[in-house]
Length: 334
Image (cartoon, rainbow, N blue to C red):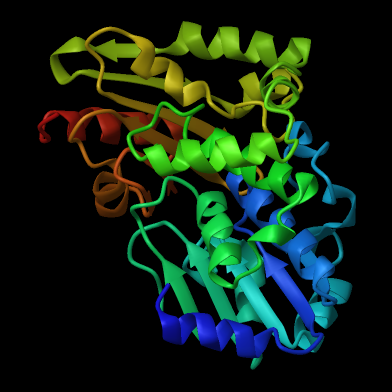
């Protein structure tokens, strides 16, 4: 952040305000960690913050401090719209375009309060009064740590805020394995651990609380995996019928796409998940090395994200989407 942006933020936060904090639809660990971390920071500085999630968050994140205060737009549109309209200031975290909030987009476009964006994805839209956007960061939570530090408030980062920030860094870095994990990332994590953040309990809460149904669904997903060694590609399909068979709940497919990359010689992985409620196929892409899944998702599947991790969607059937993907593999170089 430059000096001008820091001064603008300081001015916006100079007096107590009603502040809305928004993650993207289908919030993950980084979206939840950054919004809740900011929530606790603003609360500490005499503001009235409210986190409004576009839809439900996964059960494996429900332990996070402050998660019980989050308003869910899809469940309470009237009340959430009123909170947004009454807000003096609005923070959007871990996304950079209103359409990433689903139905909330229509409300956000009508608001006159200033916006502050904190995000690490490519090609941000131009809606914020202050934009802290940098793709060099591996997580929005790491950016939040710097954001608080830039405001001269680093001492405000306590165990509660630190727990939220640590969660987002851990999840978005792939447990510190992804390329954007830097020495600075580890120094921040060391600082958080020194503050009392429990780096043993948090991974267990995130990764060791699967239901039996989720493990059964994972087994089916791995059975469904198709491998194309000649294209260095592996992909998985899951139909709505298969999700129903194993009593799917939000979060159950989290991370499954990464199993493709664990296979020797595979550099590109995808998962295609049928969603009959929305009548779309939800897609996640992962890569290692130089193949840009962000551009691939933007070009072919109405999506985007990062160079090595992106998402998209398809209005075709699951079988037709699979056929389209197979055809594209013959045209790209991995």
